[in-house]
Length: 216
Length: 216
DNA sequence: GGATCAAATATCCTATAGGATCGGCGGACC
DNA sequence: GGTCCGCCGATCCTATAGGATATTTGATCC
Image (cartoon, rainbow over all chains, first blue to last red; front, side):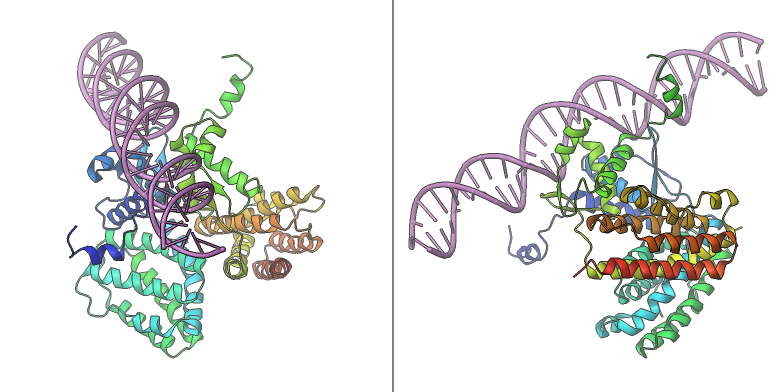
């Protein structure tokens, strides 16, 4: 083995299991719409494509099923979850509206200074995907900032679906969203919990309004 | 096939997959403490014990891992999640306190009359396990009563951990809990959302106080 | 021409065998 | 006596073969 990648191997010799890697790969394909909603996903097609056995594929798909990204029908196979309907969008935002403002308040009160420095509104994002990634990072940091893993995990799971929904409609980069993000960041920087909660609630309400237009 | 079990087959001809059944079985074993927290779970031991192949065991364990009931360490095997510590108990009840009162309010406003009739406080439960089951059913019905599947699923996932924690300490049947449940039921029957929300918040706060005593 | 039935295909589901890796144990060496 | 090294067991990971089932397609009949 050459010396050049010896340093790299020192970093991560952690295989961590093929199933985990397959899981990430399929999830990425779903989020990037390479696997559109309501699409059949065959086990041995994936096995051939990724060059691994069926077992890790099955494990990955089982995990994805538990997270609601694919569904399994007996003797029919796996399929990606159908695109969210109006009812599911309503439920999702009811949940976010319940949890995420609370997370923002706690983040304002307890978030580490170093993480606050990482907050970015997404201004000047080069593309739709670029903005989507920054938006995901923004909400993830705030959810984790509250220090409650359950809250962070729940919101992360939901945000995947928001991401897919938004990507389906090639929603334009909302200039407003950047300003709403800025308001939240400013409140967190000021350690003003009430203001952060209000700003986040406003952001989610308006985000809901922008997405709701795409349906029906 | 004999005629006697023909009726039974009419009931459930839905194999629905072995993995699903194995999943239920292992989850039941974890909840009943037949598999205590922080216990190794071997794949082929289970395969021999249940008389099925390794594949459905792996799928079931992957789903359990996604739900946080077991964890996998590479080349070491699966193990049930360790018992909740103080920090996790705090996080769990912070989450419940955030979500469940809201669910109770919505249940009071939107719950079907037939489901309201199924609500039981758990009074006169014959045993610890009996009360635990009725408690689970109580919270499940209310969570579903709000009509939001995301909320119901999140709370169901958390309630498993509450159940395990409580079972670990063989917590006595709290007479108070029955009265608190009654208060919630009464508010829901009266279709009084605010009262249901307050009663549920009070119930969770006191439940938290009762469980917190067991730790440290 | 439309509907019904049967064969064919694709897929999942199961079972078994073999290779690779990690943790623990005993013995040898310093 | 402490430390290091090789062996062994357990486990996971992979691969392949065979059985079972749902969906599709095509032909036949009305």
